[in-house]
Length: 408
Image 1 (cartoon, helix red, strand yellow):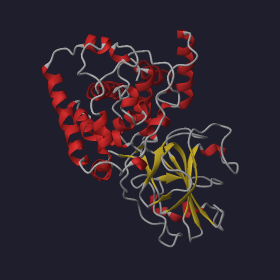
Image 2: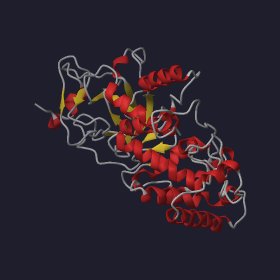
Image 3: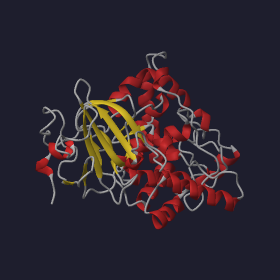
């Protein structure tokens, strides 16, 4: 984590990953140990609240043997309880998202993460904080001397200073809230706004102000530009992690619940539904799909029908694309197996599914954006039938499917 100002730390965050595959080989007392972790963490929060100032010097010089990697051994013993925590905490309530690929140790801290997020009035962001913690710690408390949110430097301590995890999480949540506020408090499902906040967590909050003033928000390209500017100013070989957003989001699943879709199309045997109910579309001669517009950047896009993702593109650049569709920007193709249909969703700000993944109708697959050849946030939606996007009359199939949603 960067200092809570203009500067961010050099280098990258931990990228190691300790996954749930390690579960199941510890003692049967793991449930009680996990409960004790949460209890101790809450007691520590109360202790902090009652003090005016924590003795930082004792952390730096090591004179207080009671401070350090709280809960390291407990987390290891916790592993048998992993499945219980996945069931209870792995999925968020509607609209708050969920986590994936978290280590047993990070899962053990989920109740404490939620407690601290509640303390700072951002409970709906707890799963994002867990994803940050997984990235910053590599999933191992001991490997980062307890500083699971990489908070030491932001508090004025030398990098690598041992910190109790409860303190690191507390400081990290405060910093992430500052980033969210500067980014306009984007909801957990607004990947564009969350990406801006996340990159600010790594670079420092000065990045958020700079990105908004110069580009209107986060892009991978402006993250690289900012990193280069500050590396040159500081005389460093690199500055921060330009891929920090991608690194954190691999542990976060925005809005995992299935949403309501619109009416089914007229030409798809009742299979394909309208992906953006509440919004109308327009098109023009020779256009291969319909443009669903009037949508805010970051609005969730739902799968029009169940199927297998055959192509998904993030991090679009002008040279990218397949079959001459580089103008589509970030895009998802879904093959509706056993049928002649495929659906395509273009110009996303970010897609959250991968090629080979099976999705359900109404499942969030990405977020509205303006990537590729686009003049503003909208969803370009296509229906492909037996490899063709064109009806016999020369109009596109998506246009034929949903006449009831056509705008003026």
